[in-house]
Image 1 (cartoon, helix red, strand yellow):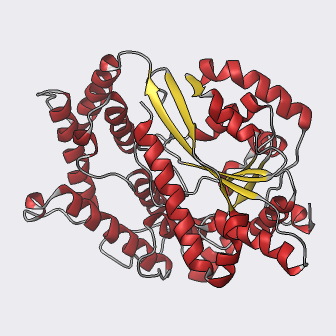
Image 2 (image 1 turned 90 degrees about the vertical axis):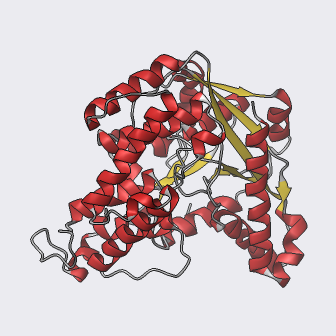
Image 3 (image 1 turned 60 degrees about the horizontal axis):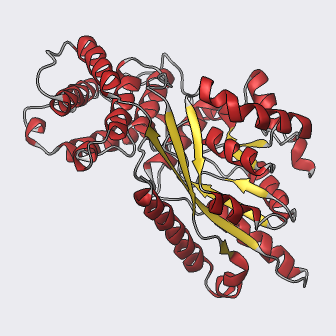
Length: 408
């Protein structure tokens, strides 16, 4: 696909059409057993996607769980089409990484401008029948009903592809951006699962477990918040009287600033937390960067916390886990899904596990939004690039959120 296919530190697609067919066929049955997920999508939505076959397509789904790529793969299986997927560099380890490359997945290093991945994406998008999937939130939100701000990168690259045609004096081709909403619904009574999770967390935290489910959930969340404040030197008699959302914001800001100071990293004002986290993680994972900043486990701490690469990595895990969380998420709509969204987050923190086991069987409900043809916006893009990109991405994000609200 270009010289970037052999670039060190980059994993390109190594498509195996037979393996794609076999995995798609198997996935329609195996995901019910392995991941306890069934895909539910309306026929008219499938037909809407089928009608775009033969054109360039960029699918932009929300990302509430780690299982979302599996759901989109199930969607490709329903259509009997091959999708391409952009995934975090860290995913490509061992046999799993080679399998992912074989079914259409390639890597990107988050936290930096990954030039090989960007060049590869542009070449991929140039192909006339390319269907590329990018999760524009940049990572899991761990929230079933809401979306985090969408990144503009996918749409930006798509317009750059159209610009290539323009510079060559060729006709501007169709390039469809498709909003995709994923929402999960448990198919059975989840009261036993909620009770079991509450009890396990209360036992681990030494809490009495009194009150109704919501009161117990808040008691667990409060204890976790207090423990984190104490660990990072922020818990005082004054903080207990502050609103939870203020305390959460202060905690996030403090941890980020401390870690960036430790790693000698500068952030841009207003930069999203997730982007700052990814940059920190990249520095930790890159030996050259570690040598340049002289980070060592036995280095003298630069703050009241004894920061080491290990404690910074743990802090980044926490920031990603709690990035989208806010007080009131469950109270606004106390569904089993919202309860278990929050309990799963708390389990990840309290038990230090990346992916807790599925709580029960779920339907993954997918809604396809109205596709936007970037060709129709290309002249405006040439006049005011940033404005058009930001406007389109905001519209796509709103479409995804609106469709989430409508999914029952």
